[in-house]
Image (spheres, rainbow, N blue to C red):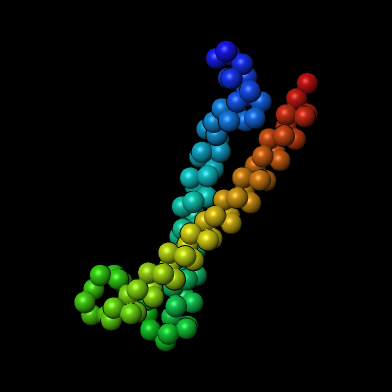
Length: 105
């Protein structure tokens, strides 16, 4: 019984773990996306508000509204960018792996 369940999961891809190559590529991609999106969002914040982005949203020198707005913009912007880039990279990685598997005799 356990063997049939394991085989069914394997066929559905539920037991596939990400390979070490993808873990490394995904981790490096996440670092690069985080760095770049933070720079772009900080630049956009400065152009939109005319002020430099707060160094720390916890600082009492900035207003509560500005701190919340900055946190929302940065959080949403960085997460959306991460999701889009990671999903597209994973799709491309999968197609490369499938192509390599098809070429292997």
